[in-house]
Image 1 (cartoon, rainbow, N blue to C red):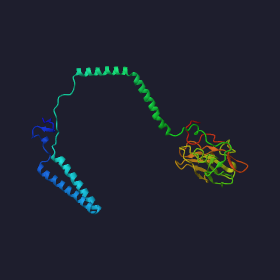
Image 2: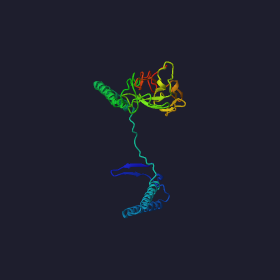
Image 3: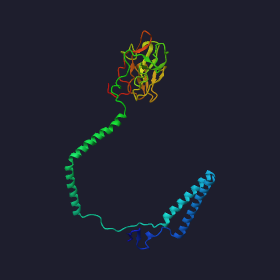
Image 4: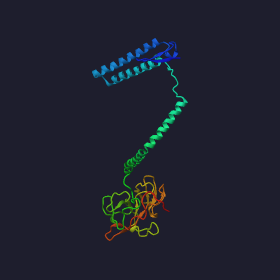
Length: 307
């Protein structure tokens, strides 16, 4: 068996010099040494060429080629050196068994258990303080995570800023008159004072020259053929802003849900599960379009249960 002995200078492998594990892998080591040496010399020549070309300001192509050839040749030389000229091993060192006796192991286990009980008994109060401090730290660390989610929605998802008598205004803040939109026209409106609020955005459509009824009980909601629906899709909240006058349909561009505006915006196609909420309208004495009230149901995707 091969033995390894340690001295103050180095670890020396001793044993039978005829051991095949201690011999290089090459059948002709001298010849292999010459080949490796040749590759190293050629690699050095490549590096020298690169250095000279760089110093003289030669072409970048020659610099790259000479450096690349030098690196490849040096890599081949090192790989051949390691594979064919170094001893193959494996190298083993004899040593005595490291396992303790069963009696020693049992005594050690009992000592650890007894000491652990003693320490925990003496440090019980500190352990409770540590647990309390850890709990407080966990709660405090969660604060930034919770706060990064933004402000609490509170009841903002249940209602909008549309109130009885709210003026319909455009994205530029201009009040909308009944004479402003031609039949077939569409405009995005907001309640006055809340321009740009995503949950308030509403599509105002001049669908007809005469009033019509979208659903029973909504006979007065479409003065002079104007109808208004929430622009927030009931599927995933995308803005429903595409209107086809010939078919009287609203289209959501995200997932192609189609709503019939003459039938209470009932979905006719696509994944939207519910109609778009309708905003009741009226025209005041000055000709401005205003809301009779707010929406009678939450807008957008449903997060609540309803029949």
